[in-house]
Amino acid sequence: MTLAERVARAVDAAPVIDLHTHLFAPQFGAMNLWGVDELLTYHYLVAETLRAEPKLAPEAFFARDKAAQADLVWDALFVRRSPLSEAAAGVATVLAAFGLDPAARDLREARAFFAARRVEQHVEDVLRLAGVSALAMTNDPTDPEERALWEAGLAPDPRFHAALRLDRLIAAQDLKAELTRWIARMRPRYLAISVNEVSAPPRAVLDACREHDLPFAMMIGVRRAVNPRLGVAGDGVSAVDLTPLERLAAENPDVRFLVTTLARENTHTLCVVARKFANVLPFGCWWFMNNPSLIEETTMMRLEMLGPTFVPQHSDARVLDQLIYKWRHSRRSIASALTRRYGAMPVPPTDAQIERDARALLGGIAGEWLKA
Ligand code: RAT
Ligand code: ZN
Image 1 (cartoon, rainbow, N blue to C red):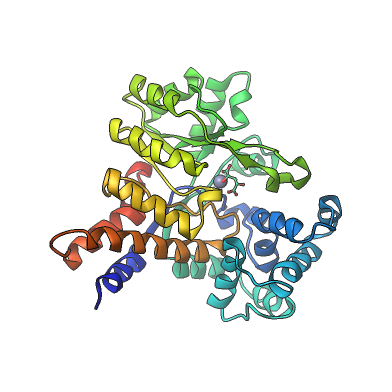
Image 2: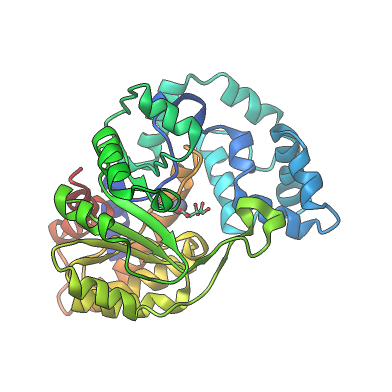
């Protein structure tokens, strides 16, 4: 077996702990999204469809029901063009994994397949096909639908860990009380926020992290609603100054920070910050970085600067079935970066070494930070 084959085998076999998704455990009912219509109306593909079909006004697209939107996306990105973008290629990977034809003219066969699935079995099959053993959700108590479920005493599948999202909750009048209440109710594994520029969070957030020994996740560099006509598909990116992150890490050595950046330009600086502060864990290739070429490049850079002490990827899946492609594709990029680094060692690694590293990178380190 070649080195590349040995590494690919170890990376494929290593269970993933997925640090950030927008998935919901099956106990959340209709909030748990799956199936071909959900896959095709993923906002990444909506943005690509509206770009490919400039005559289609966003308002006209969003006025249609979900199945009609999915038909439009299928026609624009799969029938009239080849699915070459990462998000489109991902749908093809998922369909093929279920034995469906990614080159079909329409969605009849795929819809019939998913309609015949039972949700409990589907969740098991997807987690197995994706090689995912546990994941973090994104839980926002300001969302009325989600809030009602938690208040009704919902207990999620133990593989689906809660992560308390603060983007909106942070504006609460009595943030300390809200945090106490929702930490008790959800038992989150970390608190999280997405921001454009880095600034120190309110004191109540860092206090809660200390008191409950929870990491604080910062997702840095998103510019919301650059094109508001596209809805959730309308956000953009900018490179930002990370010196406030250094200050935050230095002033709070007892708080652990999970950090991902959206701009490719910030990737290197984040590695340097992480070299200085062991309480900063770089994670994932977020959103516009979640492409094979950038994952490989980013993972190489992180290996070179940090060794195996970071989390190379998270899926950001919004639709359960996306776990299959996001992890199959990411595993390839991670394996390729690892192979190149091992290739630079004077003595080739043993299988045991390769397995140890693959397990740490795919799930071990995330599991330690999540206590999962
Ligand atoms: O990648 C995405 O799906 C984005 O829409 C965002 O949800 C982003 O990942 C976030 O968590 O804010
Ligand atoms: Zn996300």
